[in-house]
Length: 487
Image 1 (cartoon, rainbow, N blue to C red):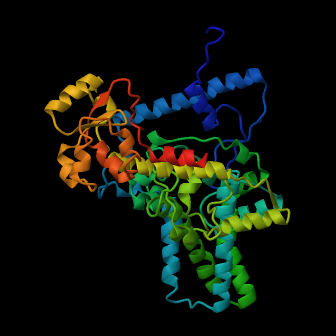
Image 2: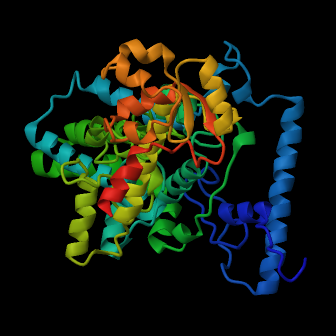
Image 3: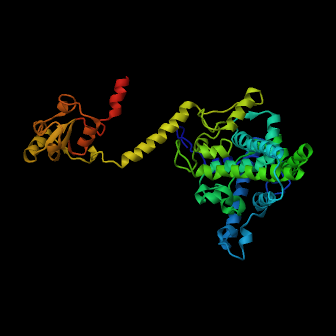
């Protein structure tokens, strides 16, 4: 490489860094064994020489595993690629998730026929629902997955405890999946790929076994460096069972003598409703609403989605500005999660609330508006582009105008107005008097200061360009005039 030659980014090495496999990191195992965790904790620090060696080792191991898995399923299709049959349907199902998000909630719903709902229990269920929902949106999502603010230990502990009560996995597992979602949005590597349909992105991705060839990784070393994340993940089974089922049962039983009601309504059904609300971010937020910032991907903004997800419904904004602690940027948009984070910052429990600049946000809005305008513009007839027209000398124009009645020069462009003479609002005589001549001054204010519509109509009559006239496709551009006035 020469002294002045720029070195290109090594895409493979960059992907290794993005996946977090370029370094040693803390490895933690939880109550589910290898299901959401991995191996024992190892040292996160090492010398530069060891680091380079570890990068090569991690990359080689990753490629070797991918190669082995690919070879394995080249001979035999993974169950996710096989059609559902009476013989293999049970192999398609992720039974643990089925129990947690379908079977247990179904038992809870059925139990409502036999267990009456008492008002104190209902109030407790709503309060715990709010605690759990906010722990997912403000904690799992905006704090840990996107690092959109910093939180003191009491807040992080609260989010970890009541986040476990939502029965949506540990912070480590949830955050890793969500970062993969942002890294590979709307691709087969996206865990809840919206292109596979509403049902799949809502719940199907959890209930069916994923295809291993689309397995992806994201760097979560910063999450694992948080002791709250490590403790919650290592003991997730205990925290989940206690906070989701035992704790609400004890609260309602001790204070209202309604143990069973607490278990059913404040426990099972509360967790079920939080799950469904969170699932709506993966499905509903990619299905209904507008795309004011970017329409290349599926995320959308809609008040209805925000209403059922504690403010996570402005999803198009979120995917464009993921580290912003807000989802809703306007005062009238519903985003209680943003308000809670802001209130925490006011009492010293949260800090470093990240926001994108208003300039960057408005740039996104304008770019998307321009994209829509360009799409509309492309469907209209703006006249033949000048580059596609023949070039005439002035002498050639005068010669041709003798044979073809209706040729007139305006702004260096030859137009054939013969078919419009009888329709001209100013009269046939006025238009005929300009034929065979340069009518630029008369057209641009000498006689009439013609409107946008007149200029646009004239553009559809182009037949040639006069050599060295300085004519361009922007000979008439309303924005040029506006800009000059502004100056």
